[in-house]
Length: 198
Image (cartoon, rainbow, N blue to C red; front, side):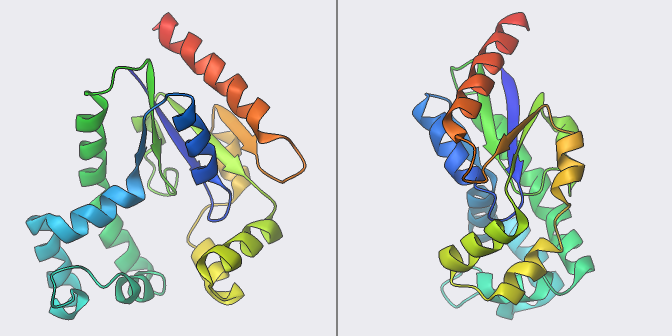
């Protein structure tokens, strides 16, 4: 079973890429969705987050106040690191458990901050999705109804595309100039062959 990470900066379009892989029959595990689930459901993680930020970080219904948490961690690098160190090992363990149940030659984890957490070594291959800086901002403003400044603040917590490109086996250019489907199909073909070799 080949484990592949699909990553990319905010607004790069990695979710769109992962939907194509899903249509090709490749199982996709969304790290962000699992992180949210764990923060709501895992009692050990909930206790740790309350210890870090106080009980007000959770709403009365027991679900985390995502907006409040985001406001804290995107303005406090140490808090962001502490949350990442808490959440990401648990997410990766969930991914491994999930991957064992899949019956395909490779599986994908969609994750925004593979390189930021130095997790690239946990995967057999990494695919990075890139897009021009201004286009990423425009996409995020339209998608999330965020301000440009808020998007830029989130971008500052992510490594530049150049860093990721140098360390990735594959790069998908989602600049709305290059056709994305042929790029994905070529990677899919190579990953299927990679799986046969191993």
